[in-house]
Amino acid sequence: LLDGADLDKAGQLPWRKACALMCDIASSLAILHSRGLLHRDVSARNVRLTADGRAKLLDFGTMLSVGVVDDVVGTPPFMSPEVLQMQALDARADLYSLGALAYYTLTGRHAYPAARPSDLRDVWRSRPMPPQRINAEIPANLSALVLQLLALDRAARPQTAAEVME
Image (cartoon, rainbow, N blue to C red):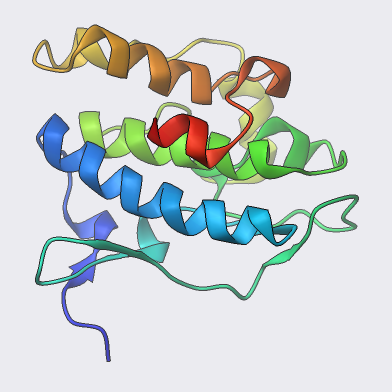
């Protein structure tokens, strides 16, 4: 019922468009997180680009409350380390996924390409190339924010979606 196409069909986008879409998604995450909820599968296939150029976060089937979880769910290239390690989850797990999504929309590549969760430990051994090195038009501060969101140590990530939007 929602017009448009999934973000995974869009490929690499101009940085201004990618930023606008990530702000739309971060806004949705801010609402979820303010209620103590996590999406747990922020990925390109779960974002719909509408005909009016906005992004809508979809598929809330894996949503849970902040805290300890007893299962590993998500789309591997967008899964944070704490998900795989079955640690207590907070907003920073979704923000990691937002960073992986931003990397994908800015570069057309996954920061940490993995077909299965079991592949992630190997791909996390190498840091992704800064988005600005893949596309010189990406501003340095945007490239740095994306890499900060992708920090394997959640303490190094922004704490809130509002912080990311700012």
